Image (cartoon, rainbow, N blue to C red):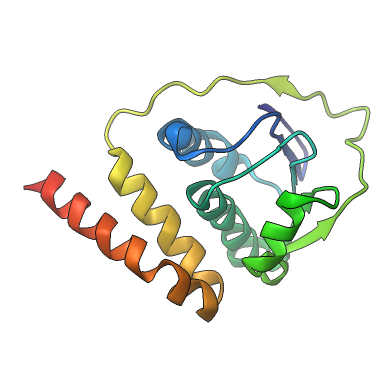
Length: 162
């Protein structure tokens, strides 16, 4: 993963599959770096991503929702046609994001490789639950698709709290 921020432009570039196994680290990076710094133009580059699971989609949805809430504009997802783009459209991401297949980062915006450290605090079940709630909130069809998953994760998170 690489990240750059300058003035009102934030650019987050993924270079491998986005899976639930890294969800705690990704959520911590989003919460601690990306969302607080985010400018009114946010680009998520998925050109190097061969696959993304529902937890990853939910974490991306949180970026889209943040952009709409704080800047009244859609973040941009850069993704060529293929399996990932089809998945984004199936999950109704065009409601939160502008989807495009061509865009290059400005030369004056250096993208720095980042390896987020493991977040202490939120457990995996809690992060996955939040991500699936975000994904469910994108569209009513997603609510029905993920209602069973949300229910199971709610039970797991409740057990963890006890």
